[in-house]
Image 1 (cartoon, rainbow, N blue to C red):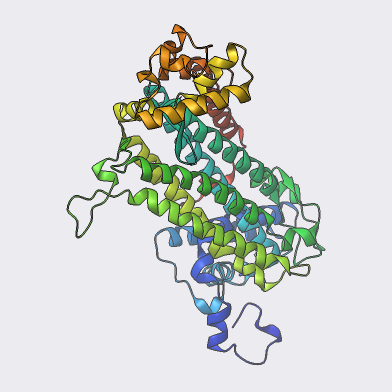
Image 2: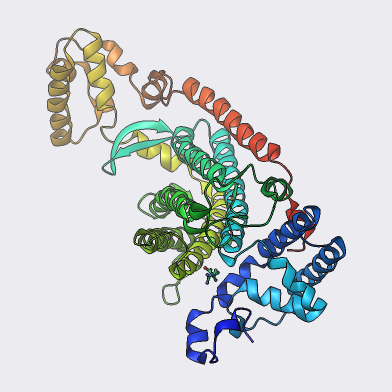
Length: 474
Ligand code: ARG
């Protein structure tokens, strides 16, 4: 007999059960579901809506079910549709009819909204923790390789020399914004929907704030119809995850390039690369490539959830059950990619000489030569023109700037003097002193500021109220 079977004269078709069931995937919410039920039950007893012995029986039953699930002993049944009814049916087997009191003043609609918010909160915190770990790795690499110079690129053409630390801190900044996005998403997710009933609220004298406190929610929802029907917090999670994946994918792309023979800027650790089944010489950056590849599927989940939501009239519609698989897959994908990329990066060997050599070759100092003329009074546009002709000369003569003598320089502008030979890769880098630039001093400041940002995130993570999540087994 279905928990909702009262008004039906026929059994549900097997095919319909198969089609509508979500238990295959939403069983993943079991911990959140039981936590929510325990808090709800405590409140019902405190409010005198159920007796305290009834509450004790229900809570004891729920805890035992949590253990059964944790030990893999729980029998999930497709004909019971979803995680909520599987757990409730088992509770009835264990404690009898009193189990039926648990669902007083509650609907699956506010129940599932609660489960999803509890799950999303944990997922957000986990993402932030992974991001901070990643930022630490970047910061450490930047500190260790403080003196390493490499070409900075635009259009993947050598543009101006930069410090490797500066390049790495660019990613640090991207991940910092990702942390901030997840933090903002957390604040909007951290709202208790329970007490909304099916859609209109409940006739029982419940205490929503008490449930919120027990579950560590900062707020309760202000509108029951909104609370049961929106999943924008799922959208926000997947959107933030998509942006993080986009950043990670760019870094992955650079690892692919840098580990190629053409660049040779880094060497991946054997344990974090893979071979070819045919070509014995190959050492492939599969982790980076798969991260780049998996970014697409996370974007797909974002598109899917937005599309699922866009046509739904208020309030709950069964379409909302489609909020789960893409969300869970996003959580798993993001977690796996951040973790494995962090390990890959930690074990990657930097090749400072190859980087330095690439930074010293060619005509990468052209901007500095132009700036030199500007400092001697030539308008920048004219200086650009002069150096452009100088570059053309170098290309025909097969030389770079360091190989020109003063007469050659002076053939292009009489403003050139001996000081032109002071322009080197190092002076070029050192000259970009302004805050946010690549000079060693500016980068030292940035390193210190970055450490401060990491600390700020750690403080935020530490100040969150303890929720009840420790009470149940994983
Ligand atoms: N499995 C359902 C979901 O995920 C739970 C809510 C069901 N509510 C309902 N009115 N049928 O959306």
